[in-house]
Image (cartoon, rainbow, N blue to C red; front, side):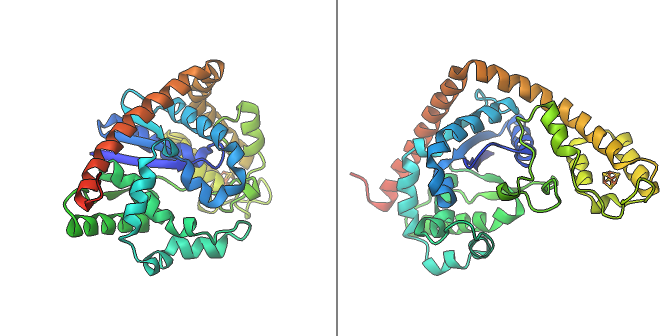
Length: 327
Ligand code: SF4
């Protein structure tokens, strides 16, 4: 299968992203042809005032991709804005999408209502799903690993591919969403993870700062005292255990210990911290190597961009010819 997915360059990556990266690595190791990119043009839709930081964030994200196990020999790792063909395909595909279809996208409506600290009134934000469709179709992807909230976007991508193939000629496969089975992490305070709440744990936190984030984490409010029994299902720490504690004995220890109050929340968090440290240690070591030798990452980016550009150029030859806009 040919797979495509990306992350927006809106800051450093956190543990929620690490879960996604694990899934990407799995798809890579299954022998799929994977294209993973940093979506810096997408980041413009909500972070137009932070473009000065985009480059640093983008390099940092690619660094984290590789440290987390993406292998540039097996997967193509690239930057969206380095492949100008994305802009051309976006323009051409936008001619096939009625504006009311975009205005009806549930994510568009939701984000306009929920995100009040940013101006989302731009045409760019409305057209975001078309750019996303261009990203996916450019590499003739068959599968896109996404969270449930992105399924509507893949549906639109399929519609665009179908319409293009019908109106012009068969160029694009209709990609399918590859839904993630993994837990969606809440913020450390139990709310949705958000920069404005500062309630997330960065992948590059060291052992000490990791504990500083875990120790005050919100727990089941029923456990006011050490002797009060609790319910893991009402506790954000448990969702982190589900994602990062793999030993069935330890998971069982948490469930039983919480329900019978035979363990305290601090004991429970210490085990989570231990498991996170052992998960992150190899990632931190690789990040350290890349920080000492920044050229390694710049070479990976250059090589990835080159490979992506070649694929994109091949697709655009077919697209221009099908649309009769080739000179
Ligand atoms: Fe949460 Fe663990 Fe405390 Fe139970 S024991 S409330 S799962 S932190």
